[in-house]
Image 1 (cartoon, rainbow, N blue to C red):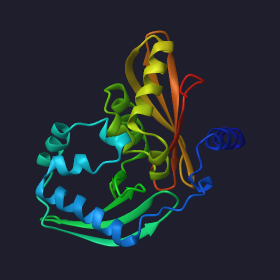
Image 2 (tube, rainbow, N blue to C red):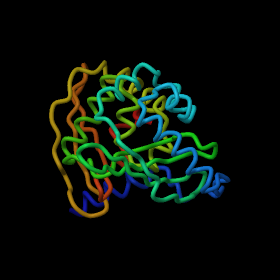
Image 3 (tube, rainbow, N blue to C red):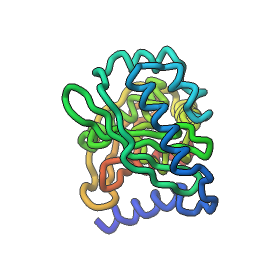
Length: 231
């Protein structure tokens, strides 16, 4: 357990720390609410073009309108939406909202950048088992689903890594490992507490490596480490 704790400390220490940012966002609560209501209305009316135009540039450049529309069309109809909380932070604002469907209310969390554009998001309460989440994350990387993979990261990590950053890291890793072959399995190495570790065995052409996927206490990915090449 001491060895694991040391490993976790080493890996997590290398992660960017959002709290070190010193510039408070200039976006007002009223502006944040208006930006979120626009996004939620577009979500309700399945207006992919509106959502796409209101994504932060780093996210918008990695996904097209057609892909967004396909996802919107596959979701259940939204009856109503409501913003329930706005929390300004350093260079970003976190907004809590609720959407209502025929199945009931569903909470959603959104992070906006200084311009009121959507930087990160997650559906609250939809956290799968750690192994399943880690496996899905790596499979998303292997399939080039950068935006989907990024959505499994913690909001702080999403704010530090654009979809293009994940693409660059994964592409570099494939080059030095001889190309991706398959995701083999995942094993929980540490569960419970503020830091949790899952090892995902990934088979490349030249080697099979264990990808260390670090989760926070709520099941969101806060760091990923596999080798010196994954930087």
